[in-house]
Amino acid sequence: MQMSADQLIAEFKDTVLDLHFARRHIAVLEAENASLRAQLPSEPTESTGSPASRPKPPAPGVPGCGSP
Image 1: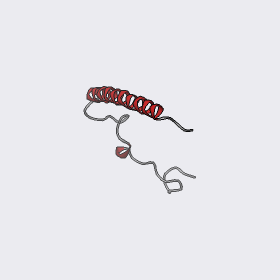
Image 2: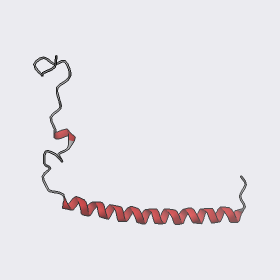
Image 3: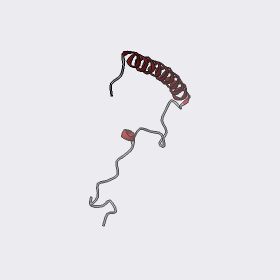
């Protein structure tokens, strides 16, 4: 598809405008995220702890772990 110079310029301007609004939306979402993170409790509970802090289940077939 061949576009004229005017069509290319119009497409470019539309794209720049879309990018501008996307960046504004991202900024709003980042601010909301920061606000929500500030409301979280300072110490993670067992249900909200990171996966790294939770004990791993035993591997299948390990003797004495209830596996047949």
